[in-house]
Length: 176
Image (spheres, rainbow, N blue to C red):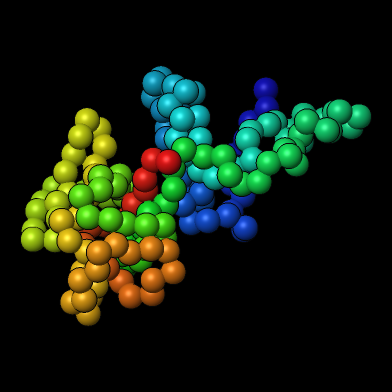
């Protein structure tokens, strides 16, 4: 029997979102396997949220004359069901926009492993739970310099205030 004691998750040229979601999915799959609750579809669904070129077994199996299907060279990194909307800063009080954020838009929150998201509300917006997932909705968008914006887009370099404190390095994502 083959026994592995480590996994390598490609991340050198990937986004923080890709590295975080992939590592999280693999960690959960391993933990669930050892607790007899492994569900391949659950981890695959989460991996499909990342930008990728599709999945293959790459070079896991030795097929020296059949490598044409080991990598996808036909599409760009355009597949994926979610877009990263923002990354929460180390202080947990603000985020940097990575896509676009508008008032009254429901954005999913992903906290680092073992960190808890606490529901709450302020004049800036609310953090709430629906089913198993947490979301953030802004009533208004305000920078840490107290400038109010109609919307904020990727490339805006001033952190945006959060309605309530979130775990540092949480990810905000939107379904596309």
